[in-house]
Every structure is written in C-alpha cells, then in structure tokens.
Length: 192
Image 1 (cartoon, rainbow, N blue to C red):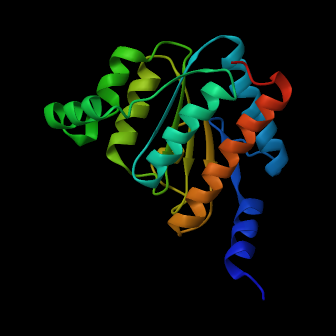
Image 2 (image 1 turned 30 degrees about the horizontal axis):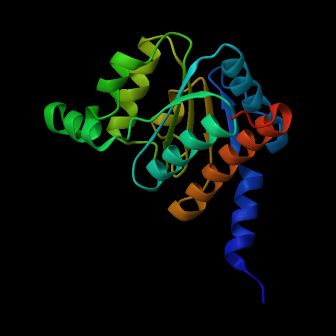
C-alpha cells in the first residue's frame, strides 16, 4: 500500500526553504540544517538563553523543544508557557502580547528566540519577534502556508515549508528542530 501522506511529507521536507535575513537561501536541506546547527552551537557556546514560542500545535512543539534543548542539548532554555504567566499576560495585556510582555523582562541581547507559526501571521508571535529584535536577540522563524507571510520576513534565519496543511508543516518543524538537538547531543553528549 502506498502511503501518500508520508510521500507528501518527504516531498515537502525536500522542498523546505531555509533563508537568512539577507535573503540568501541555503542550497539544500542539508546545507540549511548545517547553518541552523551553527547558530544553535554559537548560542550554546555563548551560554545565551533560548526561548521557543508558538500557538496551538506549534506551542506543543515549542514546549517539547524547550525540554529537549535543555536536557539533551545542554542549553539554557526558558518556557513562557507557565499557566499563571500566560493567562496573566493574556488577561492583563491581551493575547496578542502573551509572549512579548514576558520577553520584555526576560530576553537579553544575544539571546535566541525560535518563533514557530504555521500561518506566519499570528499577532502574538509578530509582537514577540519585534520585542526580541528590539532587545538585540537573534530570531529563527519556522512557518508555512503563504510564502509572503509576515513572520517569515522578520527573522534572522527563516525556515519556510511550502505547504498549506497544518499537520505536514508542524511535523516538519518538529522534525527539523529534533534533528538539530540530536546533532548537538551527538556532538556534545548529554550532560546531566
């Protein structure tokens, strides 16, 4: 039996685009992963703080990667998903500021923010990226759907999946981040 879903997933992975803010596209998937790995390793070496943000399925990826990059990658990660914090920010400032408000207090110059948004048009993610940039943090974005989505235009490094299916996009975002943390773990080992 041919599995069209898996075949589509593989095809979309092969079509994944990894861009720098200077509008330079990595020549292929492997070159893009190597570029991203170098960025994460630079931040690990500098002991930068690492923040993952996303909504819905992307929030689950963000939460998962917060744990994996801490435990397996040996990096200083912080979760913005504490129930009291996210509901306080949403209630007091509006959900569009649920990430940007705590980032005003936590993000420092030379930290790394990984913004995951399948649509690339979530206002709370856009606001968080603006805050991160204003604070001098480096930003990696992961998006899909429309090629001209807002989030894709904002990062220092931008991963774009040319697809309009949430499941495919989210699976590839998760896979790419998992691959990077696994490569870090292979290089450095797990530190308990």
